[in-house]
Length: 331
Image 1 (cartoon, rainbow, N blue to C red):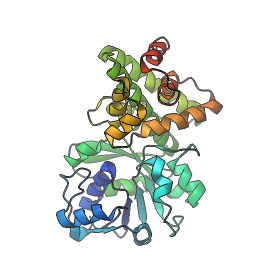
Image 2 (image 1 turned 30 degrees about the horizontal axis):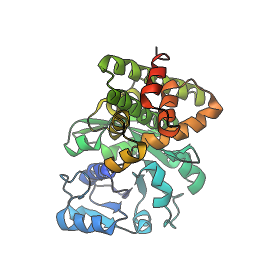
Image 3 (image 1 turned 180 degrees about the vertical axis):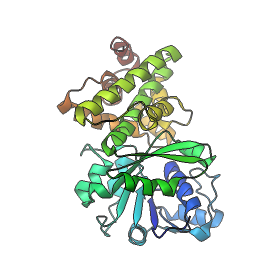
Image 4 (image 1 turned 90 degrees about the vertical axis):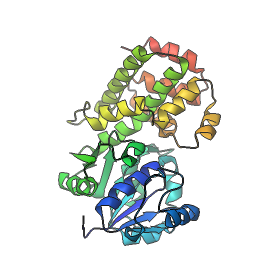
């Protein structure tokens, strides 16, 4: 695809690498910001990311890679952010080029700690990016399957459907299909919440609960997402579609789900700290659990699963004890 728009990607993890692969295949030129010079050196030498999705090969003639975030942002009209939410502000510390004249897209399925705001809200509040110039990429798509060109569906949400259609056109391919939405709030928060419920599923699995119970747990998780979205930001949305229910299902059940793996290790008796060290990857649900707990102190929405995960991860309640209490609260 040839486009007059230029695309910049911020991030170097597995999903950032997958998004870069998708855009890279559709564009004559892509700008990619990676903080670590060693990763850049390896990509330039071997045409792949040594740490994530190393089977993906890049055409270096079509890829401008820089460790200078200002250089990438300056050269790009559309900036796609794909970094862990807990570290987004750190990644942006060197940024001096304003973002308010850019179109900002978040593919981050997390929330800003301490501020307890979504990524879209963060860019609006701290970088003065109008909501009309913000997009969200969500949906049930693990980076590992994108790397294998397995058919995946992404939902692109923007305040204006025509903006969503434009961003979607940059992602479409024979293995990527896109769905348009104007529900920025719902798709972002659903992506935040499903990581918490994937941890819950992993904890239950680690404790030895079977598929029968996990089906009940996940169906109740879907009810919690629906309640949260309805009571916090009412809108005409269908939460049984792929951006909501689909993303929840794949994150709770997939072998590639780092949040489920995180929960499984905790359920098997690993401490939170040792689980983080062992995984060497960020499980967004860990941070999201604390943020959602604090948000819900104000909203008072009935969310027993989310609360149980918070108690296990942050209050030190034994997983077996907390899950036993939770079983009496499920429908």
